[in-house]
Amino acid sequence: MKEFAVYTALRVGMFLGSFALVAGIWSLVSGEERVPLLWVVVIAFAVSGLASYRLLNRQREALARNVQGRAERAAAKFEEIRAKEDPP
Image (tube, rainbow, N blue to C red):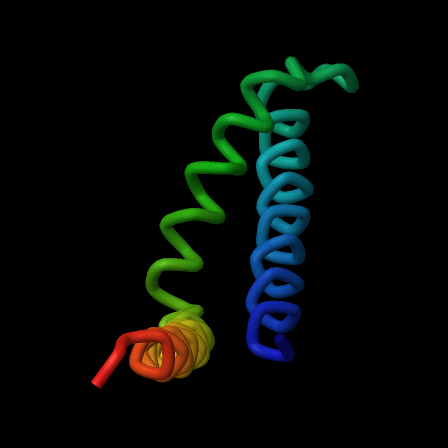
């Protein structure tokens, strides 16, 4: 669960940082205070997605190992219960 919280917090933080960066650059380039929110969100999602793919590999791998371990334990428990129910 810890890996999920860390990875999710980093992804949210990366999106918010990307959003602020894109909005700031858009405002500087266009010279207007108002920026089109939809385009800023779309570009920020793309930027944060690409950045997280490169920068958060270690956290993503830790999350994947955690999920894999939980899935293996659940499958083993399921097989154990199933073996108990089957007649010899």
